[in-house]
Length: 161
Image 1: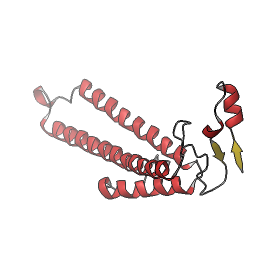
Image 2 (image 1 turned 120 degrees about the vertical axis):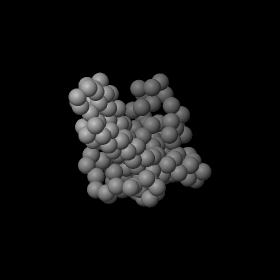
Image 3 (image 1 turned 180 degrees about the vertical axis):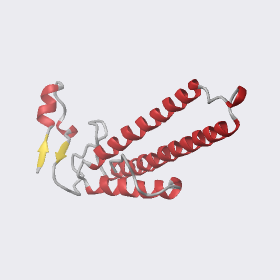
Image 4 (image 1 turned 90 degrees about the vertical axis):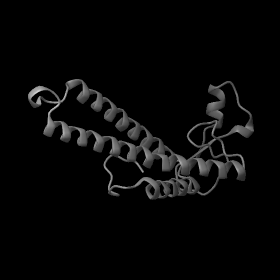
């Protein structure tokens, strides 16, 4: 099923030229005619823009693994600090680590987590173009990213790709 939103969008946005159509496929396809990737402005208009788009998708998807690795390293760093602090104490008579340090660590962990969730849903939207080329680029990007930054288990918790 191929649903063309060009007339609806043209009516809503003051009219658009016929060459600026975006099609929305609801079934798997390899067709790149009128392919818009997430945004109307990310419009594939030929082989060069397709190749550049696919390379950008590979880079973005690989970047997701980088964000995951940064998160893992940050959490490991916090755990190491907490372990050292618990053994040595952070103040007089071995008092507990400061509440501010714990809250700062939690805020940064939460920001990293939110970034991962946003990123994973963005990649899910890429996949939901139902375009085989885009789907393949997501898979290649996940492969490349994991090869470079995947130092942990391949199992995932909250990931949409």
